[in-house]
Length: 370
Ligand code: UD1
Ligand code: UDP
Image (cartoon, rainbow, N blue to C red; front, top):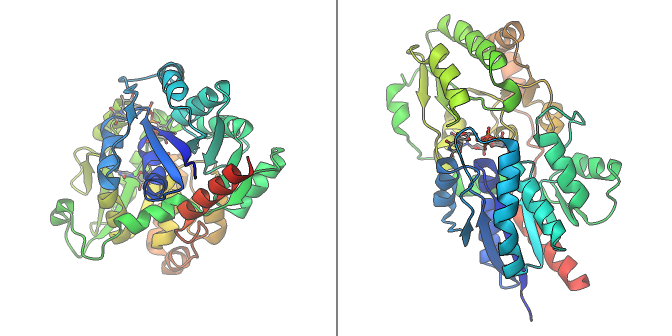
């Protein structure tokens, strides 16, 4: 029987983490021939993920430039990907989520009459500029896609609201699949040697474009204010490699001994440190999916989220990026045991860790019918 040729294209850390289990499953399944393309939108931060999943891309477009623009990411990906699509002639291109790499790859596939499968389809804030540019990247990919792998019933419903009635499979989120590769009960990281074992750990990340500048500075000052009043707290902050983030983080938190500013962690380290933390503060998308599975409350440093399931379940609380609200919500979560208990005991709404299998089966059924 002819194998189904699947070309997976991704370029950033979160896409790598959530496509990792899919790429691994494709490689181990006789029904498929797997071709992997890295756009290289992220360099070091994607390499960490590829190493963890032992994935060696067949092609690397190596597009990353310091301070890259959205237009440059999109144009360079398209011009470098097109000859590869034309040479490989895949049956389907798989993209993930909402990055500019994913959008550019989907558009390239469409221009070359290649079918598109969208992993993590249908998430919505319905707000064009939040998250920016991710909300519109995701909507535009959904407009181009043929197969939709919706993580939840809510995302499937959003797809129908967007006039996509065919080709939808509810799969769960592959972020939960990834936890099977990473979580280890005996885990230890050197950063933990620097932390008093009796202290409580907050895990912090922040990188989104809409938070650059003042909002990020305000948020860091608010967290510093609350943490400095409580000597039993320490914050681990693996700082994104973007200089726009690093400069603000170092200026405000760099000299505070309660804050451990470290380089980005590989995903094994990050997941295990999350599972050892008291709580998480983050504007990340992926973290909002992982934390409920690990029973860690997340104060989401954004005004909107395309992941309302975690808010409804009770694990996530949107606290925005203004000083007063961030300080008040962190204080309340630290000082109110009932609130902490409620947030940490909520049910994970993002699936059972078998999303990749459902995605592969849906692709096989689609190929058999076409
Ligand atoms: C991108 C995605 C965002 C995702 C985030 C995950 C888009 C538009 N944005 O945003 O959706 O949440 O990745 O982290 O697709 N850099 C390095 N080394 C790296 C990675 C980044 O030095 O390994 C620096 C470079 O200077 C680069 C800058 O960070 O130009 C910004 O990277 P970019 O991918 O443009 O933006 P992110 O904020 O990472
Ligand atoms: N993550 C990681 N190392 C870090 C910080 C985050 O491996 O130092 C992981 C995290 O577990 C999640 C993903 O990276 O799976 C989230 O990536 P990011 O916040 O950069 O992007 P987003 O999810 O917001 O698009």
